[in-house]
Length: 94
Image (cartoon, rainbow, N blue to C red; front, side, top):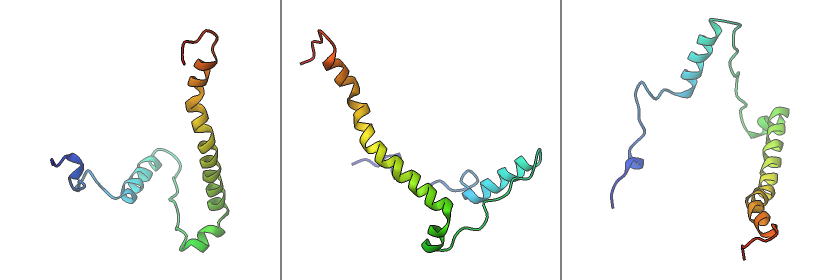
């Protein structure tokens, strides 16, 4: 068994900064040329507080709706070319 590049530990150092520091630096850079870009604010503490937020419920509903639609429309779209080939007049597909 060989050890491939996927088994290496995560890179650390100046190339891999925590996302918070990168976004803060980018926010400050963009604010130099225009209006100030506000930060994300405080995060909700706990599931109950997050579910009380209308935006969280709206996004959860949107994700669930798209997941259900994708579950049914994905296979339909994948089989559409095959159905078109089988229904074409004079097709040689058996």
